Image (cartoon, rainbow, N blue to C red; front, side, top):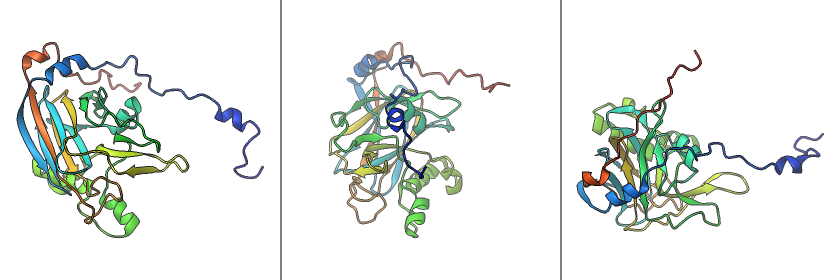
Length: 283
């Protein structure tokens, strides 16, 4: 048989129906009615600006809302989330992707790393929820990509670029924690690509990006299930319609806003406990 010639039963093999890896019917569901009521009556407690090609951070207490705003023009942001008291518990994009899909929107949750594996945040409002999946297979707010970084940049271009999202997040985390850059970098992790429109090509399966549909006034809102440290980079690719590590592309600031609801609106809510697995691993 010539290499790559299909076998006689190739069509039958391809015709096998897929099975969802992680059926979520038994997954604890967020109380969206409670969150929706709480978000109607909120007071701003903090706000920071994320300047283009840089990053900033904000602390979000459990039971508060975080809104990430587009303010002046179409701009993508790379978001890292941490347990504000323990940086080893951080956003786990791979597990979030496995549970909710390649892109997230209202009602989906952002899950933390092992061994805690619990909801860190719940998406409570998404002004780009209308976008859905376009004709190219693209959608918004992805948990596919990693983050633009100087290592891949050097691998592909042979040049060093210091204002990619990985480096931006590293500097901002170092500023918040007083760690040196090398120690801070070890905590930077795969991101939620806020407002980024991405997918996979149908023919080659390659990861693609296209110009984000975000416009000033759009925002993504998260409910903090635990005390969070949010670190956000305003990507040097701007809307990521052409390239994502550039000093030429038009870029805009983003804003992060923390909103406190009336505590009476959250009666019955409590932070989720860490995962109950006993960590014996069969021994």
